Image (cartoon, rainbow, N blue to C red; front, side, top):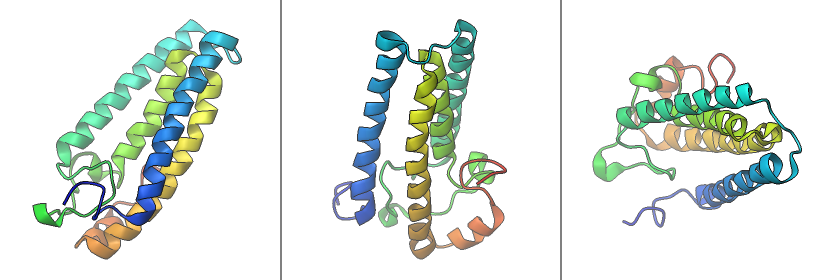
Length: 163
């Protein structure tokens, strides 16, 4: 089967492209904010902090991808590969560490590019990811053996000590 045709969840066929379009619009918005119109200028030191935060997001993404060979941009169970629950590395602390890394990426990128409003506009993508996480968990609970036990052990979805 080709990725994203038969085995991708129906709701994800809509939500995933919308999320990608929104992220592109967010990048355009930040360039207009930081370079063209200077709606929310940030001090250079805060941009430096943004660079460090952005590097942290890359490291979190690296850890997540290294730990989970089943990671896919679309929500689907990879039965052909014998997909199983991953509970090590960052998955020991969060059920969706990639979404956490994206949250950190949004903050870091906005700060680095000097767009204070970019953080606010980027948070809308985090709300979209939160919705996707809830829908994804419904799929995992229904179709991935052992996920219910894993969910009981790992309390937080992708924001530690909050959600």
